[in-house]
Amino acid sequence: MEKVMSGKRNDGNIMMPLIKLRNGHINGVPLTQLQSLKLAVLMWGEKYDGHGGTVKYRDKWAERCEGDGWTKWGDKWDEHFDPNANGVKQGETWWEGKYEERWNRTWGERHNGSGWVHKYGKASSGEHWDTHVEQETWYERFPHFGFYHCYDNTLRLREVQSQMPSDSYE
Image 1 (cartoon, one colour):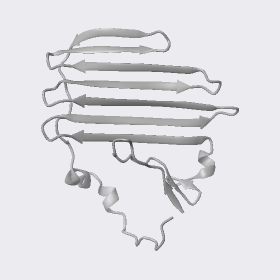
Image 2: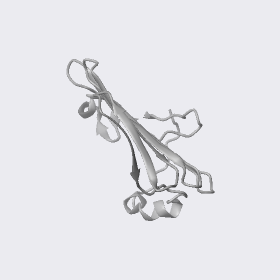
Image 3: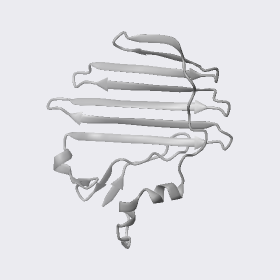
């Protein structure tokens, strides 16, 4: 039996699977070697409007058993830009210890195409910043990859022999 952890986000984009459970193995590793890892999830996505506007995001998190409790951690970021290089990049990194101690840091950048970027953020430790820096805006206005780009960069994957699918999927 094979189960792939994936799903759909509220916006309809498919979350990319990170964990594949098959016959007592996770991604080919025997489950006994990974018994302390409860969950690891990665979601990412990119949208291009065809005119230079983009939306990109990534979200990952995991949990691990550490004797008498679970440690959890993760980070996420997203960016939204219009065709004129106006946009926002923002993110968060977080951690929760096995005794419910917590830490996080959030950050953001506002870009308006002027050559100056507003950078701001704060952390649960008390760290904070709010500044403007002289910096050009960079983001990917159009997709930087396609089928042939992926195909040309998968030499080992192309060497794998094709297998006939089993007649039942669970």
